[in-house]
Image (cartoon, rainbow over all chains, first blue to last red; front, side):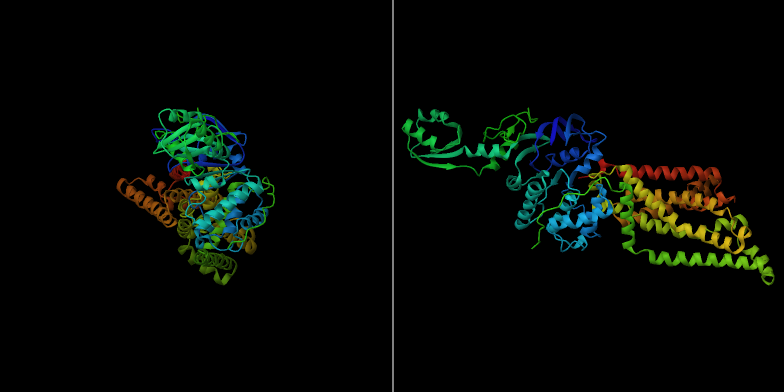
Length: 331
Length: 286
């Protein structure tokens, strides 16, 4: 779906590149693009849309090279939902969506028909003739999603689609994102700074910070890695002979007062009991740590912290584990 | 609670659409229609048109009716005759047109900047030149369309009443239509350029009026100070007024052919350049 190698994007007046040395390969699916504000997510989307010419490296989107003359036509195959409002306040949702459909290449009548269908799909059929200036935040977000879907793109870029939404609105928006991929087969790139949103819908994850890829991989791989995370509680602190032997079980991430955070070699917690029996230790509790995806993000963004998961150094593949690049460029 | 559709049907063919510039132009036209600013201007332009057609009829009567002949002699001293009269078919509307162009054109680009829809347009298969073409086309087509009946209706009436010997030359449209096109392009490019400098439609109106009136004042001052008529060639109001006169063969009192050509090319070039710079995709902040 998307590949790029050593991609660099530089704004004219900026002293340093906004994106540097990005190397990645993304398969069709829902890709979560995660990173703090200013990480380069929107710049990456702009570059992928062909609005910014790469200053270095190369890449393809849906088989079309970045910066190629066909990039304008490529945009007809891509839908884009911007982070900010981008709504024409004095017009109705129906008029706007039909207008964006026409701009994407639909004939006027087909665009009008399609506007009805897509507004129904996002749940706005009742209010589609009202001026968008009177819409709630959730409705405005859905109009933006509708305009991105009106021409049935092969790929859509969603930039912070849950911005400003209440929990129920967020859930509904993310359900729509899942439906877009599941029912329409559309590839989705979801840029967000909210981990929970990405975790809920994405099957691939890219973590960006300061214009560099800090980690990338499949969510399945990440979850498998997290499935090996356990917290072991022993009755007594391990002695000098037992503690080093814990490496037979996996990587010790943290040790404190008889509590050990471990990354097991296999996703089999019973191995911990076998190890305890073999080494004469009394293991009283094994707690799975599946809920620590936020740690992956934190550690990707702040490498100074002790490693939380064995992030490999490969670009994202559907079943690969997330990769963490020590030099920040995916190598 | 919203009701969601079971699913979305497959997309229709994407190759049947109109060119992006035309889509943008039609959307601006629909916006203008909704603004309903045509009531006042429509009334005034219709009134001027009625007076002009009435005057054509009166001239015809004076030419053909022996009793009214003395009136024709008298009117010759009061009103424009010959080539001057041909040019005067357009000129009364020019000043009003500047205000209309400012009101409509001032918001053309500025409204897109305010609602931040231009980046989203560029995220579609729309090139910056399509956008610029649509805006310039719309801002220029508007005054041209309004001027069209002022050139054609008196001509058609004159032709219908008196054939080739009527008060309006048979060849008048051949001279007036190019003049209208040049003046309209001048108005359109200035409006779009000024609008691209503004961040709200109201500010856009201010920019257009400020540039038109400011340039007029500045050039008049320079003319007054230096005594050089050349500077009047940079006055957009004067230029728009001069083209119908120059093309029907009347010497404009202030703007000659050379300064008119240079001044018009300068304004159209400058404001198109400004608009193209201000609407580049790199200006589009996503």
